Image (cartoon, rainbow, N blue to C red; front, side, top):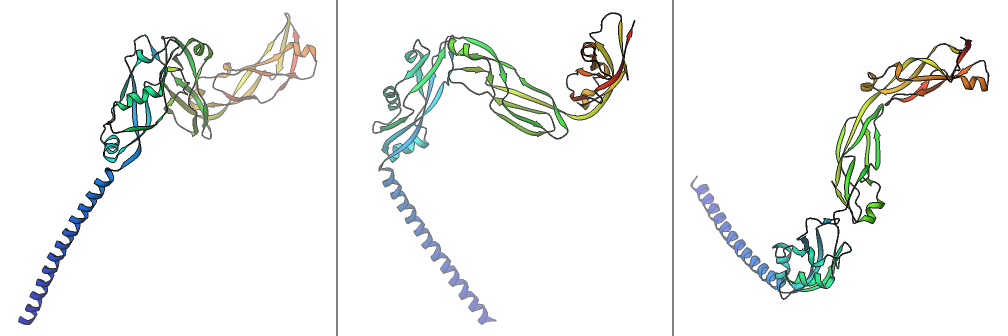
Length: 328
């Protein structure tokens, strides 16, 4: 037992020594790794590079009677050459703040304001270190459009494809609002009759859909609002029918047209929720006396002349009937 205990103690001692040694070696390795990494980073940041930075331009001091028909802010990509330290602060330390563009300084009488490439660079340099150099600017100018508050209200038109599910139909498709105010110069206002939504695609719709839809933008035109709400309501289609009286039209005085039968079945498809609002009187089936006089026949043609809103594929079960013209 004493021999086994001695061996165990020796093993524990050796393991403890190795762990301490290895930990010490690892810590030394880690220290030199971090030190070399720091030196490499310092040397790298001290080199000169070219990098793209984003500069935001914002239009300010806009008079109350002016309506902008372009964005009030825009982002410009600027290629800058400088040491790594400077580029790092531009990219990650929020060194570059938005550049303010005074409206009155650059606005012209024609409804267009332009900040030239040279002026852009001058404004950008105010945000940079003195050691930095601008290599390229994209876009090379900042342009804004405006008018003196000319306004027009136009309807909104839906663009896209909306398909109901099988055995369903759309009981209502509505844009809210269905008209918007647009602002632009007089020439553009006169040329715009309506505005369109961005393309919408909805297929196999079996339930009510409500979603916001952006309007398709036109350069130089401001929309208020810039988006509308699309409401799509569905209903289940059912096939129904009514016995509808046949009505004679264009009858001269003293004559009467009798048809056999006097009523005809009208078949149609309609939404379940809408069916309760219609009846046989909602339809109109006619026989035209003038047609009988112009082309006498043993049979009288009948026509479905009136169908209520919401009814689909309405059709007569028969299209000809027997008739008799009586003197009164």
